[in-house]
Amino acid sequence: MFHPLWTIVELVKQHRAVFFMEGVLIPELNINDDIKSKKLLVIAPDGVQIGVLELKKAIIVAEELDLDLVEVSPESKPPVARLMDYGKYKYELSQKAKSSRKNQVKINVKEMQLKPKIDTNDFNNKLNQSKKFLSEGDKVKFTMRFRGREAEHPEFGQRVLDNFKEELSDIAEVESTSKRDGKSLTMVLAPNGVKKWNIEHIKEWKKE
Image (spheres, rainbow, N blue to C red):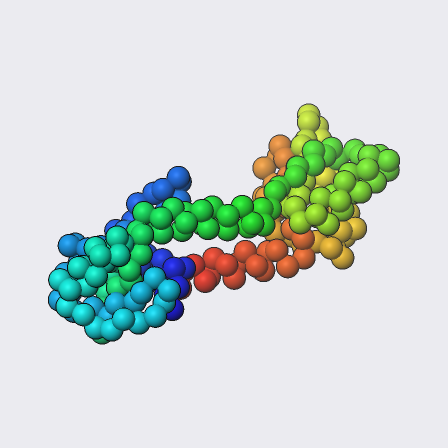
């Protein structure tokens, strides 16, 4: 049976024509008279194979059923075409893609503004906030800002960041840090496993 998601991946890899419907990328398939293949393996709307037909005969069958003849797998031997309502198919595909995007996990970055001279209460409050954000799957960016002579001793600010890193080490890992520039220091913590997932995700895309 025809699998739409598989076909999308293959078409994008082959750099086939695509268009947008309601903000969603949809592959443009050859239909009816635009099909170049002389013979096709024709699939009925219910997934049953009708058999190999000449293009003209396949188009006649489609017209009799008030459907479109859609070439879904031009690289197959013989090429595969499916009888369907192409307009309805594109709409349903766009809705599935939109639904899939809505269900994707969205990772937000929460920011914590810090000072080198931070009292115990402020530290604990920000620590508890950070734990809450990380437990919900968000990243936390700690920004340490130096004012005046504080910039002469950035190690004090670094010590505070290290304390946050140590206190949160059981639920988070360092994703990135900034170099000392005299004015600020930053550190981004991600929930355990998120950094690894991001790296593996990028590797997989590079392979495509």
